[in-house]
Image 1 (tube, helix red, strand yellow):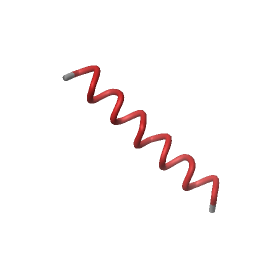
Image 2 (cartoon, one colour):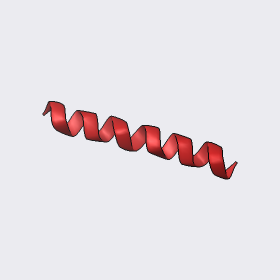
Image 3 (tube, rainbow, N blue to C red):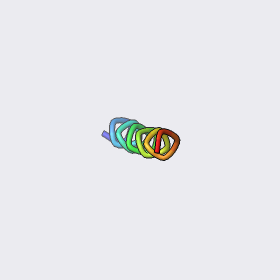
Length: 23
């Protein structure tokens, strides 16, 4: 589903941003 894919992508971006902030 497009919605699920978008949600997964959003989660990935959020995780990447969080990692950069904690780095």
